[in-house]
Image (cartoon, rainbow, N blue to C red; front, side, top):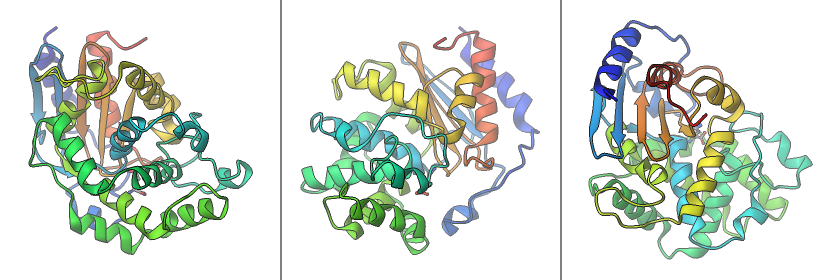
Length: 303
Ligand code: GLN
């Protein structure tokens, strides 16, 4: 498959495409990013790399980090699923409404409420969760330069009213063990990690390669965990647009409000795309279009 030729077509077709939408302003630090950025990187199981545009520029991964924290939490046993469900929410990522009816059990680990419970689990199990999360991400990417962006974390902390409400609400319903401020601090840090599409494609290769780092062949998560995490990406990775992403792209994936999307085709490749303008559901519209073109032009998806 000539992936570079396909990526060149996608770049040419979408360069002038104006998706509309906006960069998020509820995290002020993110609103300063140029809406014209556009880059894509595909990392193949063969070890080859294909890319275009701003593919090596770092941006805020935001909710994409929820996949990393879930992978880390999966190492600590099976009790996770008593506290977080695995059903699509059909609601926005920061919604409060389902929690009351469902007694503080979030629908899945990729909406904010679910990821806050995962953060709580990591804080209970790890001596230094921020350090261990960063080391995990550096390990799977094979890149020690990856880091948190303190300014983005501080910017979200100042305006994080929704997440403050979510964690306190769940605490009142008995599904939070640790101090709310400690959980929020960890959560804002995890969301602030800065990575390029190249680094994201490398990191997500473990989900295309049965839990192994491609370069070293080291197994970092069990194949069974990969199966489950990919399934949750497929059904819940795009909040109330998960059906649309499945319909148009046909791969498990995860988005973030920094404009990044990463997707995997098990046994084939991991791919990431970045375009900061978000649609109403908080997903990068141009990014979705680029991935739709990829699976159309290759004629391959998991379906
Ligand atoms: N940090 C963001 C928030 O909590 C992450 C949301 C997202 O990327 N969808 O609102």
